[in-house]
Amino acid sequence: MNDVMNFLLLLITDAWFAWVPAVGFAMVFNVPRKMLIFCAAGGALTHSFRFLLLHFGIPIEWATFIASANMGFLGLYWSRKHLIPRPVFTVASVIPMIPGSYAFTAMIGLVEINTSGYSLELMQIVMENGLRTLFILTALSFGLAIPSILIYRGRPIV
Amino acid sequence: MSLSKEQQTELTRVAVFAGQILHQHGAESRLIEQTTQRIGLALGAENIELSISPDAIVITSLVAGHCVTTTRRCYDRGINMQMVCDVQRICVMVEKQLLDAKEVKKRLQRLKPFKHNRWLVVLMIGFSCASFSHFFGGDRAAYWVTFVAASLAMILRQELAHRQHNPFVNFAAAAFVATTITSFGVIVEAGENPQIAMAASVLLLVPGFPLINAVSDMLKGHINMGIARWVFSTLLAISVSIGIVASMTLIGVSGWTS
Image (tube, rainbow over all chains, first blue to last red):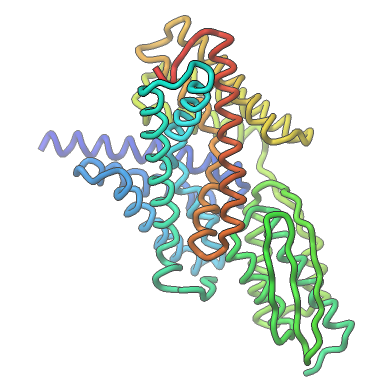
């Protein structure tokens, strides 16, 4: 019982910290003020859902894919309801899941290989982080595109 | 209903203007294509064909066997979802036959990019990067160091963008500033793991929107647009990492690959 409570607390903390970047980046993309609340809800739900999936041992790429596919369907519902293009909600909501840190580590590794010469460790850092970036990012975008790929297939959503 | 030559030219101009606005403010290619075609068809064209390339759009309208073709250059004006929303709303209104070509043109010309209050954005981006430091397992000291570094980097980014500096220079400079500030956090040993702040404070410079757009463009068949966006965001990421490495070499603190 205590374990469940602790886990719930972790989940809520995760959701709490996830809505901040979703809204922050939504403001950089100039999402209209009325829609920021949806970005906050989407960001919190998506990131905490991925946290839950990761907790059950699902690999990060698949967890990201499932979470962002969910966000795709949620965005579909909101966009039909408010007559607003889907990226307005969905992209800001998945921003907390973007593998930015992996991407920069891979790039910095490349720069270091140039300055200090080739070494297996550096190459391992570059390959592992680069591939992780690539796969997580593809999973993320593919998940968001699921509704328009599977259901709408070329017809406009709004 | 048959349209005169002038009406067809006007219709084409209106449709390409809508497409240009969408392109300049960072909409994905599928949305640009669909919205432009829908506006053109709703205003009475029989067919609208359009070709989107990374810096221009070409559009041809067909009415009663006559074609009108026009090209517009599309300079990047920064991602602005409010503009995309407004164009979409106009498109829906045209389809319901609430507006004619003249009215649509007037409304499109009246659109002004809405910007959030810049200090509010700085505050929210500071807290965003600080939240990322929490996700990486940082403690309270890392949280506040990240907040300060990311806010200052964001102010610099806004200032340079306002003066129309090259985005690559801008991102490298912002990464340099953020990493320099967080390096001092490492030097004075703020908290348990001050290296986390170094990783979190540059995340405001991740080109997330172009990356997601790139993959979804390629998925939906606009390979050339996808490649262009992908290359652009990769170059941005490389210039960020050059800014980080420059700062780490100068200060002598390493926090990424060791």
